[in-house]
Length: 329
Image (tube, rainbow, N blue to C red; front, side, top):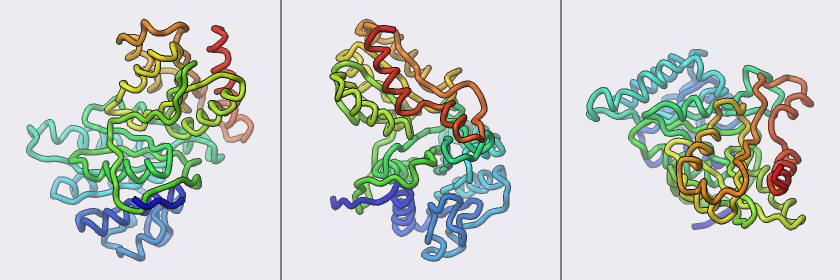
């Protein structure tokens, strides 16, 4: 497969374009995704390439957007919903949770809902409390939904194409700060398997498990730690539901220390599930220190830039958290 360097946003747009070229049942719908090209420029020129029938601008009604997508999926289409900010999924939760996630099971498997819902997530853009949340644990708690958080351009493309192959709904949460990041992405269509965690760095002293933008921050932290003689493994969960624990358990068995990093608030966050599964399995007997969670504060995201940075883990926080874990404090 050929590779070139493109941005995270370009990788998503390429995946959508390739899927639309390959399958006429694939179409997009969402607010400002047409002529405007999307709130974060992700849909770009797709409107001009495929026309208004397949790149559909919608009214400002998230409940209506997702409801239309569920209906289209039930009659054989493959809708890609773009919600302008993941915070706005709150307006559409009835359709997401009570319709999209349930119909396949309520009808005995006779019907499926092959819908992909994409939404920008997370803080760091000065968008304040109502446009900066990390809500992945909401969706991961709902049976019938698959939930993915791509952390790299390559996974942004591969996971999206895999999501489009899935016969039932997949939620794809894209961190806003990743859209302009770049990486090697094959030009061909390929799939990154849903439900497979990725060990992005090996290490022997401690294991860091992260999601979304925290993966790249954890990799930076691991590089700093290595210069101080501490070798940290970094595991990108990639898929919250279904969750693949095998690489995590294997790494903990080797390192004996586990730090879990997420941007979302600590209370009832997704990483609590990871900690619980480690505690319930044989990996717990390998731990030499208690599991550490490094998470966002349990407060709404502030508007002031200094406060916005202060309430979610930054590079220095990860480095210091790892060093504290190594010291046993």
